[in-house]
Image (cartoon, rainbow, N blue to C red; front, side, top):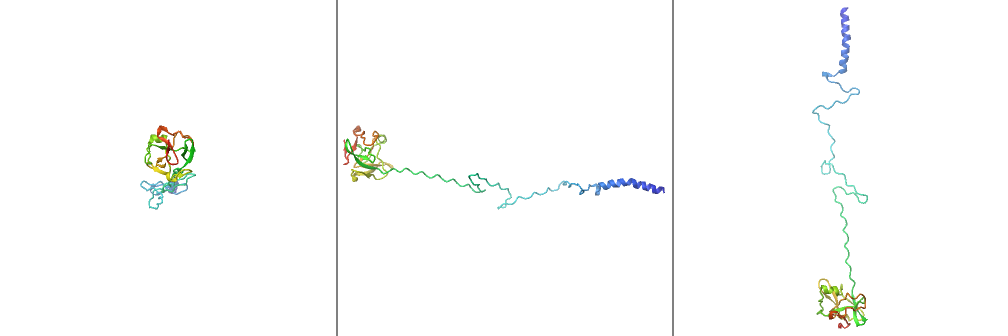
Length: 215
């Protein structure tokens, strides 16, 4: 009877210890996981980190990330990656002004019938010109501008068409001439009918319809 009582006491004392061991559970002293509210175990040292998803390969097999395409403004479309922007159109060339065709006619003045241009401005001959060639240099032309023409001179009323011609005076300059005289203006004549250059320096004279200088 005494032996049974001692065994019962040992069983009662061992019960809490068994319950504590069951609560800790697991083989070889390791904690158990997977119960309610349990967390996943941390990765052990030396375990590989989870692999990241690979970037998609490009058309040439490259896996480098492609830059986003350029965005255009409201007025300009976006330029696709890898393609050059279109060049701006070149400005159109400005046309050169076209000089109108010149004409020479005869007008009645105080000096008689003389040559004038289509606007009635007086034309002069220079006594130093020889063989139809101009001897008026740059300083001379500044005061006595030549009658320049882009082509043939149109004969007006009273002139002799066979005497009206052109003479090249250097470069692309073509000067109108009548008979043997290249024709000039005088800067002192400000309007049609004026003859302020007549007889200046005893070298400049108006031209008659027959091609002679009126002195």
